[in-house]
Amino acid sequence: MNKERKTAVVIGSLFLLSTTTFLIGDEIIAEIVYTSDYLKESYPNSNKIGLGAILQLVNDISVVSIGIMFFPILAKYSHKVALAYLGSRITEGVLLLISAVSLLSIIPLSEEYVKAAGVDEPYFETFGVLLKMARYSAFQLAMISLSIGSLFLCYLLYKYKLIPRIITIVGITGYGLLLFKMVSEILGCNLGGETLYIPGALYEIIMPLWLFFKGFNVPANVTCQPKSESPL
Image 1: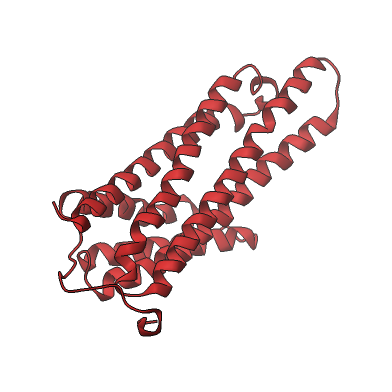
Image 2: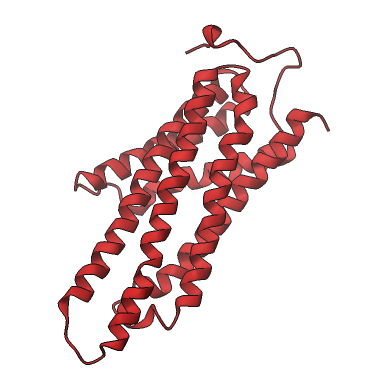
């Protein structure tokens, strides 16, 4: 197994790890935090919220690692794209970390709410809503960073046929729709609904499986380009 093949296996594994940990963590969190009794239930279930946050931290580490592992492959064709993708993944990881911190902040708020049982204090609900909004806003910005960086990635994968172009087209479609969804939500339009996630989700399953079993189609004579020779 050559170096590019090993890198492809690692990247494919990181994509699958990222997707799995995020989905499981988000499901655990949603069962508690996104209910009408979240202020009452979050503190007693802090261990579950902590587990969800840890799984999402694993996702954060995975997305940054994907950018790092992709860098030497992409740099053979474009240093600018390689740097843009790495930067987008680092930005995504930082924003998702902020999202997780906002989530964990609900636990001490819930503790104070439980201690003040029977006292009707509206600021508990106000702070709770603000923390959940901060969490989702950080997630939205993270997905915008992911979408923009991944469109650059897909451009390079498509141009040089590093994976089958039909898979790359699914990726371009998926990340384009994800970017559209996040921007429309920030602007208050919320167009398309949850169905806009589907193409991107398919890509992030099919592409890593392809890398895991087939690897990149990297010509043996390609070497890293000087920055001045970048295609972009």
